[in-house]
Length: 114
Length: 113
Image 1 (tube, rainbow over the protein chains, first blue to last red):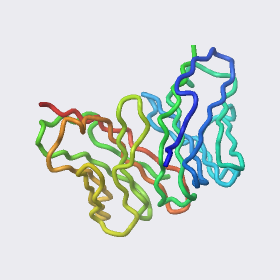
Image 2: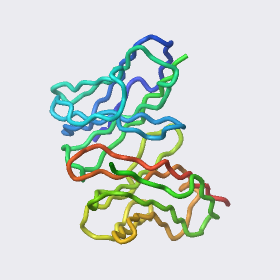
Image 3: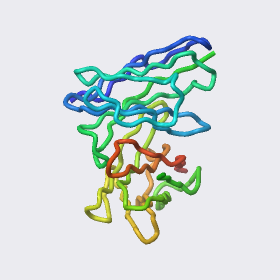
């Protein structure tokens, strides 16, 4: 079956702009999580959605937001972009939202802020 | 708060040699533990996971890890390294109530011919 699909794969934005990233989970998966990966901070949890509700949130400013649709697809939005937001953004889907469930990752969206 | 420590940001082994990547976690209760591998410009692929069944966990590509509660460790091993194992490896932990993974800083494995 198809894996986790993230679009676009690459994105270049200017400081101050806003950006929306998309994630389509594996069919049947209801939990979607987002992570930011940077050389300096490593992999950091942004937030998790399950059945259209945000269940957990990491320690990121309010400029980072997300949502999940009824078909489990998820979007992540970053407003007022800063240079430090340049990162690989990874989406992961799981069957349900238990801690033991395996998270399947997409290939990520590489965001560059100039 | 949970945390994961991966000792050694870079590990270099010869092809055919033992691979040992170290991971220690801090948690008040035994968490769920995972090892992921990341190839350049790719997402993360699960190698194996510990969810309190067997303490010795076997994963894909010949990797295995042993959960040692007394040492709060979950080290990743492979008896014989292959060139294709060169990648970055991440240890991660999640608690029993949340779907959020806390990752270690990663270990880049280099395999010399």
